Amino acid sequence: MKVYDILERAARQFPDRTAVVHQERRIDFAGLYSCYRQAVHSLEKSGLNAGDRVGLLWENSIEYIYLFFAIQRAGFVVVPVDTSLKPDKISFIMNDCSARTLVCQGKFKRYLSAILENCTTIEYLFSDADFSGIKEGIRADRLSISPGDSNAAPVDDYLKSIDPENAPHVLTAIFYTSGSTGIPKGVMLSHRNLVSNTIATVEYLKLSEIDSVIVILPFYYIYGNSLLLTHVACGGCLVLDNRFMYPEVILDTMEKEKVTGFSGVPSNFMILLNKSSFPNRRLESLRYFTQAGGAMAPEVVRKLIETFPGKETYIMYGQTEAAPRATYCPPERLREKLGTIGIPVPGVDIKIMDDDGNEVPTGQSGEIVIIGPNVMMGYWNQPDEEASVLRDGKLFSGDLARKDDDGFIFIIGRKKEIIKVGGNRVSAKEVEERILENEAVSEAAVYGVGDELLGEAIKATIVLKPGHSSDQRQIQRFCRERLAEHKIPKYIEFSAELPKYQSGKVNKLALAKKS
Image (cartoon, rainbow, N blue to C red):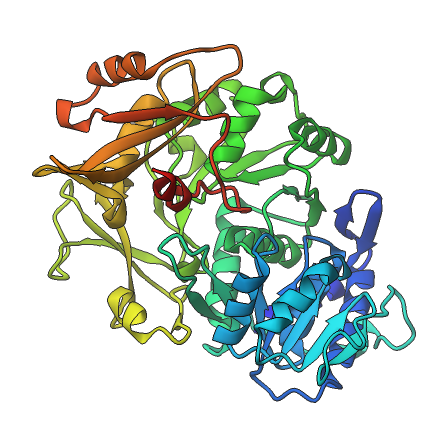
């Protein structure tokens, strides 16, 4: 089974079910399949070679979904591109992976000249806009696709029998990390990586064709991509809404479309809980929440499950390098295990290891090591970085954690987010969680800054809830009641908002650079 078989199987099994809703647009699986087949036909005529990289610069939409599958079906490697990046960063990614083709939404035409100016590898453009003549030597084709086009083969005539257990470990996608360490890394994922993780996620979330999810996360982000694959795989519906800057609009969409699932990163939940009517909405059709993309403070988790006691809340953990899901907490154990990231997803093994690669006893801390068919093939063109995290097929996550007697995993912090204050090691995550217990605080980011005396000092940037006030001394006093003295932030600043990547993750690199 390959990634595109997920769509082909859904088209056979659920042709008349609605596959995607995007504001006023709707398409069923048969229509989505028809568009996909037309896109495959157009891409196959491009003259590219099997395995060539193809950049996909397109916002969440019906088009993104069928193009994502079509690029792979045509024999190429899809490279989803962060639509929020500046042209020079997009050029870097295209050059880094030697992409010969860019599939580009017309709305990004104004950036295209700047992208191509520093991009030496692109030979072919594929878009819904006219890009002809944009640069000498580059061929451009216009995307002209509609559901039910006569050029699309009938579904039953095209589909082959599918073996979901037989997914080849062959490169099919490169997802670039957000570059929180400075330089984006191209995570190479195979059909086996993505298919195995999709099947496992469908299993533990108990997804079926009656499920639908509100999609606020971009598809180029691996968490968003997981929503795409899991809901197509089960014959469910993807309800796309790219307007999270207006939370009430998102909530209205959820109610109008009767979605059964909401998936977000911690900042999404904190904004909804503190700055919208979310706590007062009934959301009668909603069955579950999923949260990943960084640790969510136990206080926020507690507030979510107390606000919606009748909904299932799945706290999850993963990485792009794990395609992406590694653990989840069964909702019925969440109150008992508050603060956990749960247990391994089906088919995955998690070990907690010391610096010498030995598994540590229960209760002791060490690094999370992920073992399973979801572990990436490696980093594109970065062998040294790859060797530092991949050893004997095991993924060394960089996250520090411990297991309890029941096998539930609790993260202590990231190796790279351990702040060395004098002779003490402080987890930024621990300090953030204590600050977020303050009723006046909406969001908090804790990170290390240079200090002549200590070498590194703790700094916190805090967003207050509307109508609340505080100052540095009050926050420090609050922390002092809950933390050891060396863990109290030396510097505290207040901000109207935290800088974030488009995925919703807090950009601590930007905060540190400002300090």
